[in-house]
Image 1 (cartoon, rainbow, N blue to C red):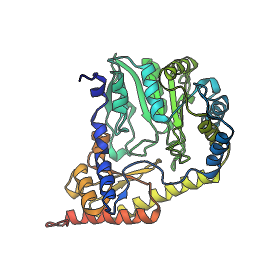
Image 2 (tube, rainbow, N blue to C red):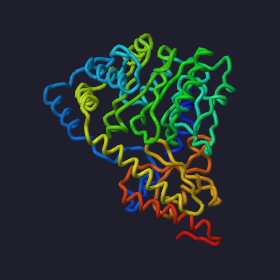
Image 3 (spheres, rainbow, N blue to C red):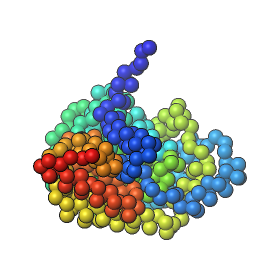
Length: 397
């Protein structure tokens, strides 16, 4: 049978990145001891007050069709939190709720891009961006970055790639996979490019509350940027709610109306009991959230300290997020081969940097998604894998 061209556009190289994770799951099912560091799913439970809010909402009968744009209460809470954190003047009418940030990104590009449009994205980039952009027959134009510069994009490199077909710039800060966060100076230069060339800025800020160095800048708060910026965020990482599927877009009101129309044609909102739990998560200053952030920071420091002392390995200290990139090129293997060997011979599952773009070639991405004891075990296995490779006649049983 015949399938649409869309099926090819969404099956980019990024879709293949998860094969090593799938293989790790297979090995686990066979009883093999595998430490899963290949996916960014928090290992913490959702804080109990949030869970109880959902239970209470269910028991109260909040199981009917929700408001398409999101409940007023949740949108008020999202707008209030964004104002507090960014200084941008927004209200509930600027906010549209979606089932996760992934769906929010997809919906935004559907409303902004036409076939043939170009979107500039600094790589390494999140593996699904390619498919999301391709779904509307637009094209990703990658902007290389340097590991030596902490994987931070240079605005001059962005400017050099702007053409008459450029419609938007997509930035993820802090970045997945690198953890790089952009400074105010870099944001100001990117904002100037957007204004000069009349471009949209899509700002993916899902790791904004997991920032350990510096201050998070939400670019929509900069002069002249509110009317051309779609800010995307969620509770998946910050509140350990990845399975709840709660995300949102904050943007100019005309964009919000277009997003409502799109949601009407495919989503029809997210359940009220989930929204009520999300509202509590945003309204309450839960100590568990701060504890999780501190735990991630300690895990980051642990990985960088241990692997930084290992021959053949060079971790890149991230500003934020829940991953650490490690340069493995001195071992003599590319990242994909190293990741495969690490899984099959040492029982640790990580993703190869090549899946995120050429700038991450030779690096592996380690997820900080197990406790410190297990992470210490994983670091020892990674170090052993590198050590064995540096031995001239190493063999792995």
